[in-house]
Structure formats: C-alpha cells, structure tokens
Length: 243
Ligand SMILES: [Zn+2]
Image (tube, rainbow, N blue to C red; front, side, top):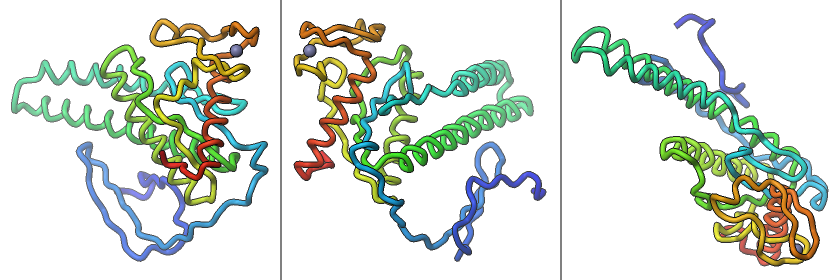
C-alpha cells in the first residue's frame, strides 16, 4: 500500500491510543484508530429560528425547514454498474479465474456504494447539526412507497443510517432531538386548520401542491415539515422525546 493510496475519512482529533487494520472483500485495507474525544456542545443557536422538522422521502431525500436535500444520483449510477458486473459473473464458469475477478469487481462496487453513502450522510448530518438547535425527525417505515423492493431496501437502509447518525450527532453536540411517531399524518394534516385531508397514500405521491377546504394553499413538503416541527416541539415540551 503506497502512501498515495491512503484515503483519510476524517482527520484525527488527537493522538491515537491504538490502531486496527482490516482487509475487506474488495481487497482494500482499513485502518481504524482509537482516540479519546470529548463531546463538546456547539454554540447554542436561537431555538425558535433554527429548529427544524425533517420529512424523509423519495422525491427529495429529506425536506427541512426552508431547504431540501436532493436524493443523491450516485446510487442509481452505481446500481447500473452493479447489474453489469452481476451479469458478467453469471456468464463465468464456476471455479475459473474470470469468475474470481468478476466477484472481486462486484465487491468493489459494493464498497464504493458504502463509501459514498457514508460520505453523503456524514456531510449532510454535520450540516444539519451545525445549523439547527432542535431537530425533529419523522420516524421511519412510514411510507411503503418505493417502486421496486430492491430500490426500497437500499433507500431504507440509507435513511436508517441517516437517522441514526443524525441522532448521535445531535446528542454529541447538545442539540434537541425528537422522533415524531410513524402514524402522525404529517402530509395529510392541514397546518392551518388541523383537518386531515391532504394527499394520501401512493396515489397522492404525485400531488405536490394542494388546497384545503379551509382555503389554505399548501406546498406538500413545506406543510409536512411544519407539522413535524410542531409535533416534535410538543413532544419535547411534554418531556418524552424518545417516543
Ligand atoms: Zn385547512
């Protein structure tokens, strides 16, 4: 392993006390260091101005107060590569050299996907933690709305990792964090009058804007975020942020 092929996932916060090296299925070496860290809260932000609900979905990866995180395109690109590599493998004779190479190629694509997913999630959750004093996250498994089972599981895996990473960072840096129950009707609830008549289920996925019978016009995502934010605030005020 030459020095130029070393890739640091982040800089070390202090001198390591130990190091472990492992090799993965794609032939890459990983070194993990044990370091002592202190959980230092970030400077406190104005609560009212920076608390955010987070609506996780498919058309956008996540909807936050005032901004959206687009779904990363690299997964689709890598999935194409993966399918090509798998077709190649299926044509190889068992026990052959080519088959071994084809298997290694597949492991490399998987490793690349895992790297990109981790980088993306680290980056996005760090930014959210920096800019928000309170984070209210919609609990997962709300929406069985992905098209293919495989796409769904990859996407769900990614969202699950996003949620866990974000929660850990909020605790580490002194941010309020609460989950909003999975049966809370964040999309259907009108944030103006409280009636439940917004877009529903799979058919409702395409509806991006709607008007409530009370006369309020809604952007689907902004309405959902506001509902999650209010519900999260209520949950925290009741002192049960983990329900
Ligand atoms: Zn209404």
